[in-house]
Image (cartoon, rainbow, N blue to C red):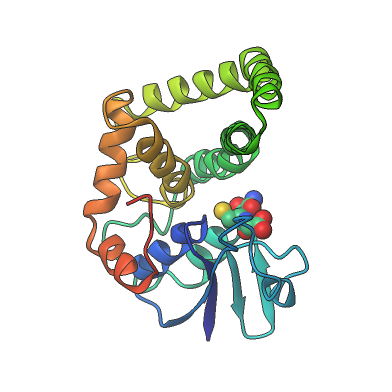
Length: 224
Ligand SMILES: N[C@@H](CCC(=O)N[C@@H](CS)C(=O)NCC(=O)O)C(=O)O
């Protein structure tokens, strides 16, 4: 039996949506973030030593890393997938999906996560003079590095999506599941007007019956 170890408001939403598109039986084990630190509870370390989510277990196998889980599920459990999911990509499409699987976690997410952590640092800094120094420091780091990186990534993805429904070819596939989470977060945090093609992509994801079914099974999810 497939078991998805699902942390609230996390990348595990990608996998929950994919499982619904695949129409396979699975069990959902929900873990809640610590309300103060936002970190995962220590029970997740019993599933995988890194203690992160998503993690999928399939009998004796433990599969970690979103991109790896998406590959695993599409390769082994795609017989009953929704009709419009690309379960047999061509070699060229495979290569393109692979790019987005790696890009999402290797290049796109890290500066976004860094910004989120730095913003938390700003919010927590006190008293006033410490906050002043922290703000100056964070502004300098953002201006010198993370800010331009985030802007370049968002422009790149926005341009890619401008005349496309899905990331690769005409059909929903691995790349879309992987890119859905960071793009949901971008639209939720930056609003619907700045990146129209990204917003339209996220809307398309949210309109899918399988995505709606996934939302009903998950605890409250802040990015949909
Ligand atoms: N690259 C990993 C990242 C996994 C990850 O960092 N997950 C976050 C949730 S979005 C997590 O478990 N955070 C809780 C913590 O670090 O304690 C993947 O794509 O699966």
